[in-house]
Amino acid sequence: MNKHTVMISALGLGCIMTVGGCMEPVVARAGNNRTVEGGDTVTLDGSGSLPRDPNRIEYLWEVIDGPEVTLAEAKARGTTFTAPRLSSDSTVVVQLTVTYVDLSGLVYPPNRDTDSVRIRVKADPDATEADLSGEDADLDNDDAEADTAPSDGETQPDTSATAADADAEVSVVGA
Image (cartoon, rainbow, N blue to C red; front, side, top):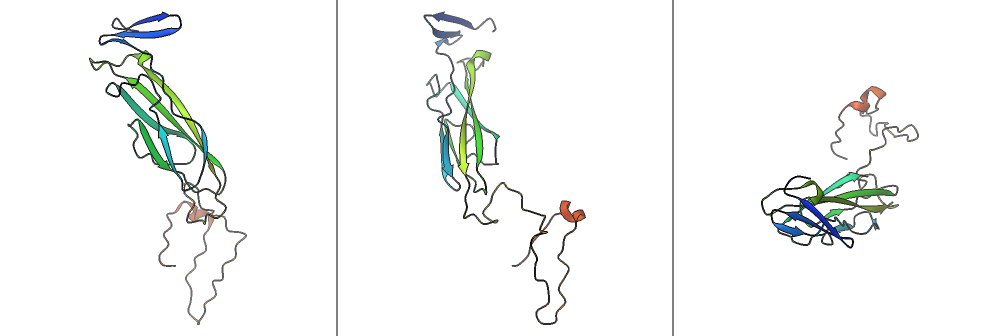
């Protein structure tokens, strides 16, 4: 704590004295954990966070675990993302950091709190390989046999991959 901040506690209620006056403690509330389907739009809402003065609160949403998703607004009271279509159940963990900024523009250490929300994304049994986002394509096709025989006497290019090709960039043109 610095010389501009004093903690006062009476009967379990806290107050942080700052240059701008007394403020309620900072509490981040990222919302309830839930389960969604792949492709659903997930809405996250930090409006239950304290204090409720929107002019002095900064919000920061960050994905801290799970499949990759893109947050629509990382620095807003609420944000959204599209749940990825996955071949197996997975959980996206999103953290909310709430920071109180004093009228003087200062941020004091007790004026920040974090909370996280867990979004379980159910597997999509109907998802095709092209639909699956955030998952690596299976490069080991030992079980699959492709028919590469020429149909009208043309010579087909060799499209088989080796272990050395696994790190190479692959492009597919035409289908």
